Structures are given as structure tokens and as C-alpha cells.
Image (cartoon, rainbow, N blue to C red; front, side, top):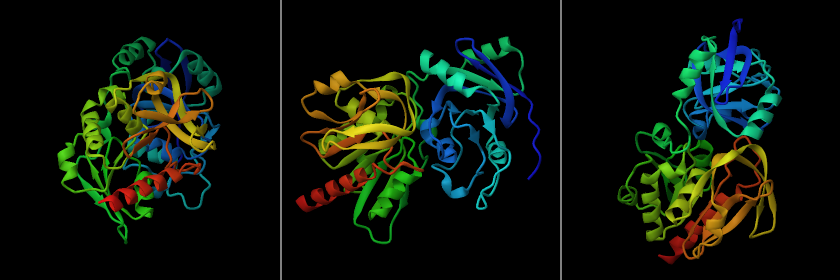
Length: 371
């Protein structure tokens, strides 16, 4: 393992707050929305999650990089984050099965970051002030120059990003024994979502974010999955149109995260940007249908409007967040469609919510028996 020498690095926040530390990853400059993740493990899965596209991620765990990287612990084919902010960054790793250090991984991916800063103070600051844009640089020391570059970073509100992370071409994945066919509208799908379908005998055909409903329907799927993804759901209207048509067809539909928000949009229920959002592996959610609570993996900065949902005659809330009482799940009363705000595929964990894939498969079975 080659020796790495860190240079000075600067993190500048939109409100003028400055943190100085050491560089990690590639030497360079990168901007995006600054947000924090409270997960204690699974950093490689976080960094490759397409829902983080356009964001600078603050890891609240003290040590990052200590178990290196391994090829099968990715959620997409590349690193998606704009940059990393952490306290202690390890250039060495101790896991025998790891193939490289996180530093080498970031260098190859072109990721810029900063370490050796007080992440506790940073997180307390943005927890109070709210998620905001920021810029990190290990090559520019002039604050005024960084301020100019930061002003060019677009706001996450009104930003459509699914087109940046969706598959450019249709592809299929098939288990040994096919029981059902699921069309996936890829807004930034995670690999483990597809794995969960495959494990349950579902052949999946993954379509680009802007695929017309008619094109997906030609494959004659048994049901539809609307994936997670980055950006503002209100700006992803091309996918909302497809969701509306799926609902009219009354085929089973399951939405996660962005897919959940688009199901709301398709029913005329609004979404809005949260003060900070939910990002981590430890968010408590209550299932209102069963009365049971589950610990969930989450990554979202927008949320469905609770009051609009409560007053909607055809949609009902099924899950709530036990920390702030925000919407975490809903279902339609007269159509086989439901969604959750969190990530039941939850790689690396926890796995309290994988039952939702079973519930979707049950809907597929019920629908097939009707025909």
C-alpha cells in the first residue's frame, strides 16, 4: 500500500462558516449540498448510493476507511457522492478480504474530501441551520475564490437529477426460476433492491427514468417498481406521468424513497424539502397497520406533505417516523399501490423492513390469480 501525504483542505459553507483540515481522495475542488449520515458502518454502500448524487456527505462515525473497500459492497457502478467530510480518515485497512484502501478507491473515482475537522461541531451547526450547499477544496486556499465557486452550485430545490444516475439502456436480470415479471423505473435504483426481487423469483427489466409507460407495458410485466433516486421529486415530472398511467392500469406498484414521493405527486399530494432530512441506519418507524416498530435505513431530503395526505380520499398513511412524525409510508385504498419513504433493501442493514418486498410479491400473486 502506497504512502499517502495529505495537504491542507478547506470546507466553506453557504452561510460563510469555514472549517480547515486535511485532504483525502483526489486533490481538487467539489461542491454540493452538505448533509450528514448517522450510520456506523456501510460507508461504501453510502458512497455508491445514487440517491446521494450531488451531495457532500458528512460521516458522523469517528473512523472512516478502516475496513477498506470490496467490489460486491456497492449499490451502483460508481461513487455517487460529490465529496466526503469526516473526522479520522484511515489510509490503511485491516479487513483481509478488502481489495484496496478507501483512499485509492477515491483517487480512481476522482472524489475530493476533507478530514481532521470537528464533525461534531459541523453536524450541530447544520442540524440547527439546516442542510445547505458547501464546497470543499484541497487546491484553492483563497476563501473569496471558493465563495465565487460555491455560488455556482445549484440549489437542491427544483433540481432534477434522476437523468444523471438512471441507466442509459434497458437491461434484464433473471433468477433461475421466474415466478413474476417486475418492470423497474430506474430513478437511481440500488442494486440490493434488484437483488431482493431476484431472491423472490422476480425477473426484473430495468428501464431509464424517462421511459414512456407504453414502452414498459409492451414487456407485459406483472407489476411495477418505482425506485429511489436523487433530487427534487417535484422536478421529476416525466416519471410522475408514468406513475399516473400505471395507476390507471391498476397493476401492482411498489415505490421506495423517490418512488414514494412520485406516488404522492401522481395523486396530487405535494412534497417539500426538509430542514435536514433523514440519513442513516437507525431511524425508528412505526407501521400503523400492524402497530409494530422497525429500525430503518434512510436517505432523503424531501418528504410527503402530511396534511395533504391525511385529507386525500383515496390514499392513507401506513407508516410514520417516530422521531419527527413525518410520513414514512402510504397506500392507495382502491388500487394495488403502496410506497415507503425509507429503504427496505437496507444494505448493509438493518433488515427489519424486508417484509415489504414480500408484501409486494403477495400483490403480484393476487393480481395474477385474478387474470
